[in-house]
Length: 483
Image 1 (cartoon, rainbow, N blue to C red):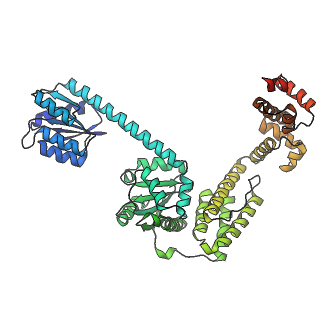
Image 2 (cartoon, helix red, strand yellow; image 1 turned 30 degrees about the vertical axis):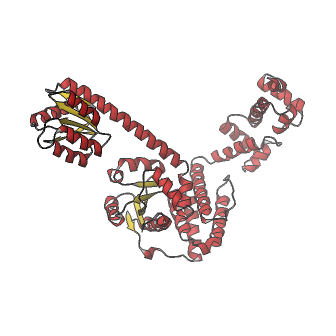
Image 3 (tube, rainbow, N blue to C red; image 1 turned 120 degrees about the vertical axis):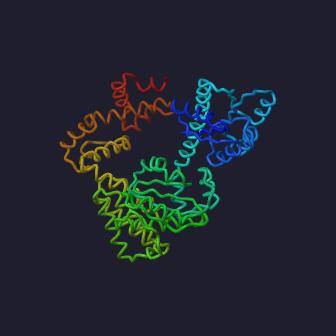
C-alpha cells in the first residue's frame, strides 16, 4: 500500500481524484490538504509516495510546497495540477524534479495512466529493495550461528559487532536481549516479518532449533520490555528478557541473563519472565550432575527442545572456574549417549572453550534425539545408512557381508535380506556398483594408472579388475584412461 497526498484549495478537485482511486481499487491511501502549508505538514508526518499539488493555492503555492516536500523526501513523486502550463511553470517544475503535470480539468484516463505508471515505479523499487535486503540477510545468515556463538561468549570486538549490525541497518548500541521459545527455526523469519509489533522495531534475531534470540535495539529498553510483556502475555510462546545493555560490550551479559530467565520461565510454564538478580545462582556439582541426567533422559526420549533448554541451563551455570568440571560432565554425557544410541559419529569433547563445548553438546543432543525418533519408526533404517557410508568409505578394503552384519549386530542371512530391502541390491551387486562407479570417475581424471585405480577400489589383481570393469561398463579401463 502506497500513500497519495492531494493538495488543492478546491475540495471538489480533491474529492474527484480520491473517488477515481477508490473506484479503481488502486493500492493507495489518500490524504487531502487544502493549501500548500498543510500539504507540507502532512508530507512531513506521513512521507507520501506520490503528491498531487495544485499550483495556485492560498498562503503557499504548489511550487514552494513542492520544493519543501522534495527537500524532506527525495523519493517522493510530485505531480502538478495546473490550468496554466506556461514556460515559467515548466522551468520551476524541472528544477524541482516533477514526475508529471496534469492540466485542469483533469481527465480520469490521464489520472489512471499516470497512477499506474507511478505505482509500477514504486513496485520495482520495493522489489529491488527487498531483493537487496534478502541478499544481505542471506549473506549474514551464512555465518549467523558462528557469529552469535562468538558474540555470546564475548569473543568479538565492538567494531566487529558494529559492522554486523550496520549491515542490517542498525546503528543503535543500546537495547535488550529477548529469548523466545516455541517458534521453529524455519518459522522465525516469517514471524518477525509478519507481526506488526516487530516491524516497527530495529531488531537482529538469531533462530535456533529450540529458541530465537532477539537483540532489540532501543533507547527505551525498559518501556519496550513492558510492551513485550503485554504482547506475549498469555501466548503459547515462552519469553525471557535479559539485562538492558547500554553499549555493545554488554551484549554477552544480556544474552546470558536472558537465557537464564528464559530457562526459568520454560521450567515454570510462564509465557513471560523479566530478569532479576535472584535467578543468577551457581549450581553445585551434585546439581549439575542431576542436570546432565535430565538432559540425557530427555534426549533419549527424543524431546529435543526440552533437552536443549536444560543444556542451556548447564552451559549458563558453568562459570570459568568450572570449565574442567564441564568437560567431565560432557564426557560422561557423550559416553552414555553413544552407549544408548548406535551409529552416531564420535567426537572428543573440546577443551579449548565453553563456546566449543556448547556447540558440541547441542549438536550431540540434536543428532541423538533425531536418531531416537527415527528408530521408533524404523529400527533398521539408520543401521543401513551406516552400512552404506561404511562401504563408500572402505571400498579399498576386503569387505564381506559377514563383516558388515557383525557391525550392525545382525545374523548374516537376515542382514542379506534387509540389505536388498534398504539398498536395492544384493551385497555383492551393491559393492561392485560403488567400486565400479568410483573407478570410472578416477580413470576419467587421467592422472592415475589402471593398477592404482584397481587398488583404490579394492581389487588387488589388475586383470580381475579389468574383467569386472569391462563387464560392468562395456569398455576397458585403458580406453577410459586414454579418452
